[in-house]
Length: 221
Ligand code: ATP
Ligand code: MG
Image (cartoon, rainbow, N blue to C red; front, top):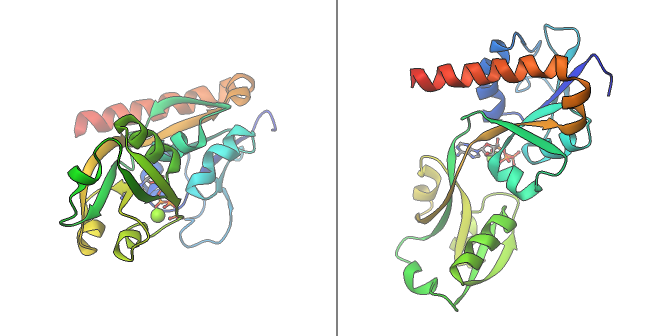
């Protein structure tokens, strides 16, 4: 952790795209587009600021261990990670979606999810799913998947899935329907606790610029 440099952990895709305007508000412009570049370390217009491109679910880990000073991660990822070693000073209101329970259209979920019943649930989010069903008093066998959750109930791997939904298009295309809303999800700024102290002079202006940009965005919406 070099004292006068900043390393920012971001994932490719929607989080990167929606973070660009926030970075710009803080005066940070990436030298390359990670979608087209294969580089995992991307320079910026500022000589002391660089981006590292990691898997979305790995962002909290890089920041926790100080390999990145701060990063941007979905609340879904942060709940599963647990948040140790991280400050979460700002909800950036980007990459918004909802954590939902979904089942095949026509499946009698109300009956199947009565307290005391047993349900097989496939998900990338075992902790979120386990807590949700524990609160309902429903026993679950959690089947951990890493993607394409929608397939699981269609081939008899599970009764239900717990997954992120935005438009519902993927559910619909696979003849599934959302039956329960677990929580709203958006992306958060996560900051390494030691870096926030040691690099306060560098990090604080970025947090403030992000906060202003988020506020202006909310006003415009
Ligand atoms: P990978 O696609 O590499 O397996 P991932 O699925 O975790 O990783 P993304 O799909 O880019 O990566 O999702 C990154 C984050 O964006 C998620 O952690 C979540 O917070 C948010 N997200 C996921 N799906 C949606 C969605 N449909 N709409 C809005 N935000 C979403
Ligand atoms: Mg994905």
